[in-house]
Length: 189
Image (tube, rainbow, N blue to C red; front, side, top):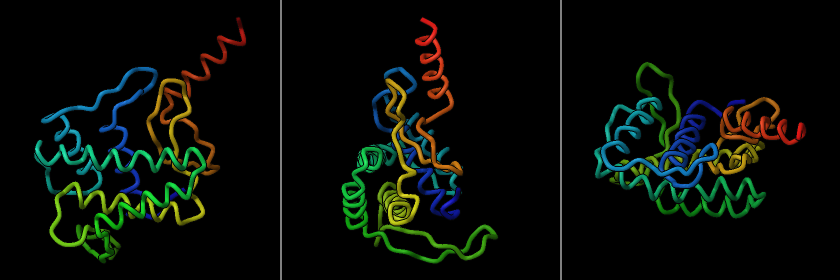
């Protein structure tokens, strides 16, 4: 299941930002986000995989922590069935960033739509505009319930369900296997 290539990309970036930059639990262990140079390095890898050619510095990378903190409650609201709350949060991000559509053609690709922050903006604000717009497209469509938070015990990482039947409940196969193994052990006891 695909939304469209650009929406898929920015929603995937939103998931990755939340999972990388918000503390909590991951696969049964406490998770702490990377700091400074490591944070910038990981962010740059994310952005390169999304097709960006610009690099963020360690100072610029710090700004992305607040973007991730704004994105996480959107996934939590959808997982809790509070779609109105999720939409309200996305609308607030859209307004704060001044996200606006722009047709772009680069790297031999056909024309496609990008969403940028209005006026001069930091890399974090620009990505926040794109992520908020991608989430708005998802929430405003028939697959709004494809955003989620892992249901495995001691894991709060987020995901977007791109499976055909929309039945994903875990952030990773590792969490799914942990739950299945625990259930098996419980039945055998």
